Image (tube, rainbow, N blue to C red; front, side, top):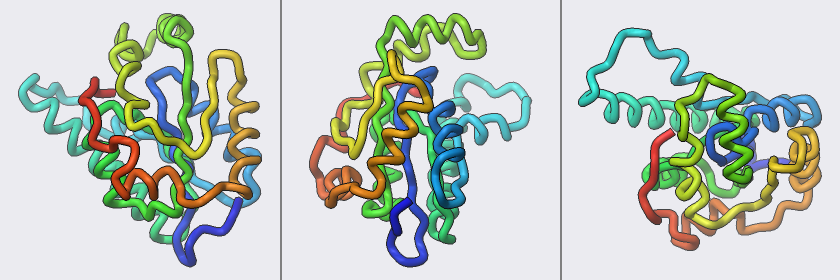
Length: 197
């Protein structure tokens, strides 16, 4: 893994819809990257929440606070010098804006994790642990910002193949990074609204 700015860890930021394979890729990356990394999935933060029922009117605010806390936890881990593999769903524009304000843009490798909608729907049915249609609701929004450092498509490529592609990209990643360009206002960071995830 290439050196990040002194004292700050590298953030490998996997963005894609639910069921696109982000967690599987992250697991493979942790097995093949040379340096110690931490996988920080947003699902783990949702799972920490107490099981009490939440009134419908409270749900949006609670979910937003969960995502905002997740972003700050990632930023804190990287600021302490830890390399982090994040799996994320940029289903609403504010999530990307929040991350752009928190993460050092030069130290972020933004990875687009793509998958065809029919395959996403097949995986969703097979998994049975996601709301039906979640991936379809996210599909048109998660990649709306349009800029990545590296991309992969899990429709046909395995998680291991995608992880190797990302690993091989890291030593030769160009600058400015996608996050640097997005932070400078390129690529529509404040683009169209979208479905949550």
